[in-house]
Image (cartoon, rainbow, N blue to C red; front, side):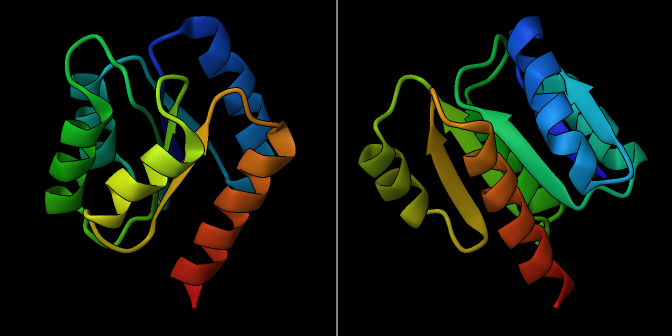
Length: 122
């Protein structure tokens, strides 16, 4: 299962469709609180988190998710940070974290997600 945390409904719908072929299910959350509830109720293997959310920023949510399930890989997405700024920020938070700057191609998300899922399986 993949957990997708994105507050914009249209973006969330498109990203869920892109991710769906990679997992048995894509769980969708529009905020951090719902994401944590879904994480605690389901066997999630990958998390995709938007940087800007209505109730918490993506980095704070990532820190919380890492405490709850440190083994789950995470992809942070944002239209507010450049690729290099996002990568630099995540370099300080630990392994199994990737960053994609919006707008990105669906194939970029699919490849990044597949790489993280493959790495966590081995």
